Picture 1 (cartoon, rainbow, N blue to C red):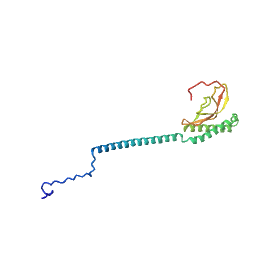
Picture 2: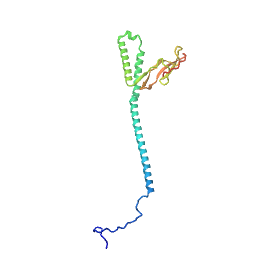
Picture 3: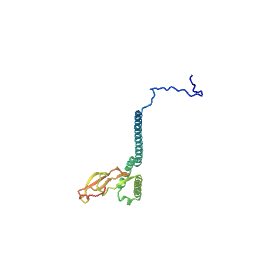
Length: 195
């Protein structure tokens, strides 16, 4: 008589099925899976670190671009304004020296143009545009463009003796080179540490 497992009697032994279709990995296969998972983990960590580094580089480049644009964004506008400054300077230099003494109305115009030129230079300087001081300085190809040479034995060779058009820097970077006349025929210039 077969015993009923729900009855109070001891349960009958259940037959154990042995099946070869169970997917239980053997120990060597599990070690290979563990190594594969660790390799994938290392690869993913490497990719994460590379992505974080790339993100940081993109952020840094964007900040540099913003800073560069802040400093040099007015470059084209500043170059255009320099022509106005040049014209004011030319207007002042074209006036005869004794004209202001004879005519008070003309003297007022000259004073007004001089004040306008000073104000323009002040505005340029407030925005980082500074004039290059060239007269009496040694010729520097980074900041000067030689337009002509002037024979002057009293001045060391290579000295700027005349400034035809002034040069300007924008935040320390060359905006426009000064167009100058350079001396020749004088004594050789002594080496110096000046730029």
